[in-house]
Image (cartoon, rainbow, N blue to C red):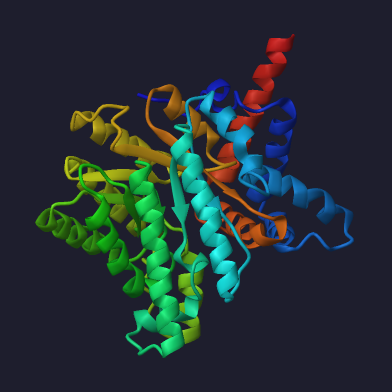
Length: 390
């Protein structure tokens, strides 16, 4: 049975300075008193005069973001590849409702895809629909509202952008993951993604859809999508996610005074996640899987299922996905054992990545116990290195 406590494998890509930075950050995130301070600092725009803020913001950015540009991420891609992990890029642009910004984002995604095509170390590219269109328009489509002529043209242009990106990925034989984002967009984006999978997912999955397992309706959606893919003869690409937008789902429900679509307990979400993993692995001949979780128990469950179903460790229809800067003890121990693992590397200007860093802070200090686990293993590795020097 695999052990995630092998710190030499987990942190081999870290210098001593990197280890110290990670120990400080995760120590703060694990501390119930200090973590709110970290969340505040992570969300500021590096304009406060506080010395603590000035010092911590670049440290936070360096830990969880690959760089300002795609080119700045190249050394990270090489470094993690040397330790048997693939890379996946996600560009984080400024939030904007301006068409020229969407066009810039579109061109940046093209660069991402072209980089992945030319570099086998980059396994996937991930995109967010709201980076390519005004979210307001997606909400109108999702709720069945009629679009005016201008919005209709923008929506059609958005669909063409998404299609052209998937076509480029298909021609280069490089998968693309479309983030379904919050539930209030799903009625607008699900049908688009399904059509793209039908068009491009022939013998293998080029287009992947994200399935947010904290939503009560997601498992049935996965079952239905698979049935549709079988009837229409295409491969279903499924990225199974435990919970990326839980906070915003709860906030939206409170504002609207409506029932929240999210499960009330972490245990229910974990059960749904495991059911989804079992379903995909049991149908692996017609589906492909990205298992996106930092939960050790779930990963061990997935590994045991793979073994019982005689799915090889390096089967190219199964990947594990983790965020850059987190869960290295899982990523690189899995990689060392021969499993396909990918690090999701976000990049963008510090001012644009502030919301992402706040999300990292909220997720990391919420229901999961990752920060404290990270701290204990980092301390163990520091002691190991000191003993080796002596």
